[in-house]
Image 1 (cartoon, one colour):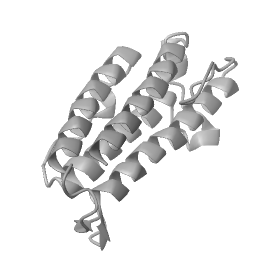
Image 2 (cartoon, helix red, strand yellow; image 1 turned 90 degrees about the horizontal axis):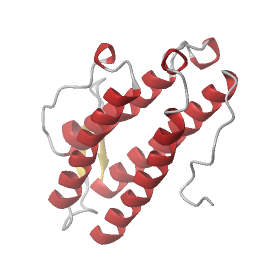
Image 3 (cartoon, rainbow, N blue to C red; image 1 turned 60 degrees about the vertical axis):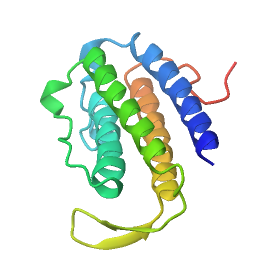
Image 4 (tube, rainbow, N blue to C red; image 1 turned 90 degrees about the vertical axis):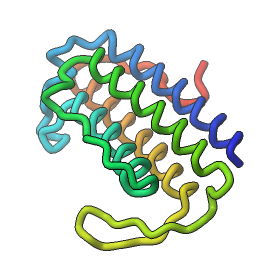
Length: 158
């Protein structure tokens, strides 16, 4: 299963690369524009939320590592966002390597509100990548609202 998940993450990287290439065509001020229709979030805050969710679920919840979250004020352009995602990529590789022999083993995870749940590393990995795609769609929608014509950023594209 480890090699399948590694391959799956490479597909995520490809789709993310298409999104970041597209984001390079968007003016920085638009990347930072907070849209009322998205709870006053910007494309950058959406992307950083996803990066921080990788940290929360993989590092803090499953691996029990106390890594600092990415700070919004330190990520105000696409270059800094991409740098944060390079750290996310390293984390994903570490996570998959650490759990390659126990991806199905249930673990107790404590949520920020103190509630606990049991999930396997496989379930958590699935959650973070689908969560990324949810927010990738929101970033595309936000750009459309700002007058841009999005490109295809799916895993399967021409």
